[in-house]
Image 1 (cartoon, rainbow, N blue to C red):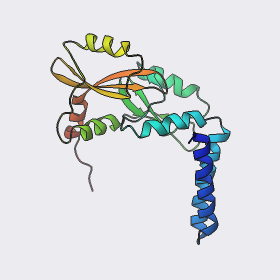
Image 2 (image 1 turned 90 degrees about the horizontal axis):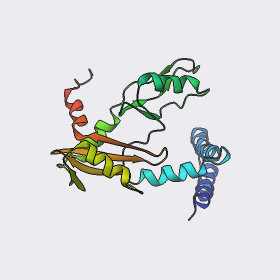
Image 3 (image 1 turned 30 degrees about the vertical axis):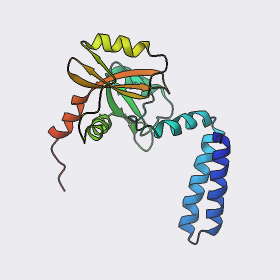
Image 4 (image 1 turned 90 degrees about the vertical axis):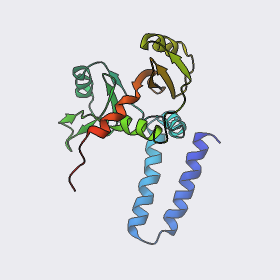
Length: 194
């Protein structure tokens, strides 16, 4: 079933649920879902949504919408956007950050996000996953990864005895290598006060 047909069918089901909803609040929530699908369709984001939908079923790390070498580059990019993409993730120096802004969209922030650390922690909960390839150096691994014409969204590599996650963000054609040790940061972070 094509994504167009899938969205139309979902809208039909939501429409039926809307008609049968008892409370005004439920009706409003269902209408919000219907309008969200129309937003995707009418803003020309159907194919992006289809790719996003496919990626969500892979258990790959959270998508990013851009990657930068420095915080200054990321801030300049964010400042130049008339409407900030709130709650989207970007990579800055190979670390996840989340885009946030004030209600009036004038103040924009890029705080670090533990998203990748949680992803790797979940991957290793029952032990280290097997590596698909082994390399002596990061350069060898990177050359191998760059040579992959259609890399999987994520794969585990072993580099010099340490496990790495090779991630391909196909929405922006970006590749990144992350050491599994980033999950160790979760152990060092003190728990929040109740």
